[in-house]
Amino acid sequence: MTKKELVSEVIKRLKKEYPDTGCSLEYSDAWKLLVSVRLAAQCTDERVNIVVRDLYDKFPDIDALADADVNDIEKIVRPCGLGKSKAKDIKACMSMLRDEYGYRVPDTMDDLLRLPGVGRKSANLILGDVYGKPAIVTDTHCIRLCNRIGLVKDEYDPAKVEKALWKIVPPEEGNNLCHRFVDHGRKVCSARKDPDCENCCLSDICKYKP
Ligand code: SF4
Image (cartoon, rainbow, N blue to C red; front, top):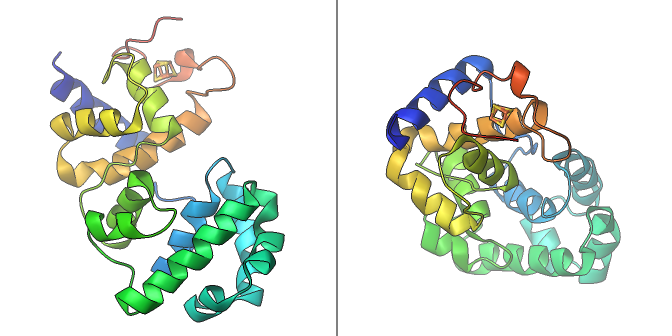
């Protein structure tokens, strides 16, 4: 089986297993997803979803966050960890959205990468989830599963895994495939305990050997 054939089979099976996949960060506006992805670094999506409620109670829009005292943002986002740098990035990011992008979250990789605190992973998430553009989000689940399944070999650098996946994944499938890697990583192919290969829909094609 070539890697293209392997990924095509993985896509087919994971679609069946997780038909209603999607981003587990809750948001109602594109700029709120930017805030949430910054907070999600080294934090669970569940915790981020709780913390942002308090954040938007106090700072309900882009202007409010751009004009906020960074210490006041930090007090609220502290439970997500890395509070100081996240608060600084959120304020700077909202300021740039207002002052340079007319309150609109940009829809190109280059423009997104100019925003403070936004890396390729976050930019891809915005492109895929907000704008429906081809995107590959190489988060920890994606990287672990790609190595275990055999889509990449001993490659843990997010940018390199992304590059490898672009070569074999049909562009229109990338975004939801990555969401399904998260679903499967949480439910079956865990990082914290042994993967549950006996109950995995990929067991006969996966290269993982314990
Ligand atoms: S067979 Fe095992 S290692 Fe491979 S994807 Fe499934 S749970 Fe993960």
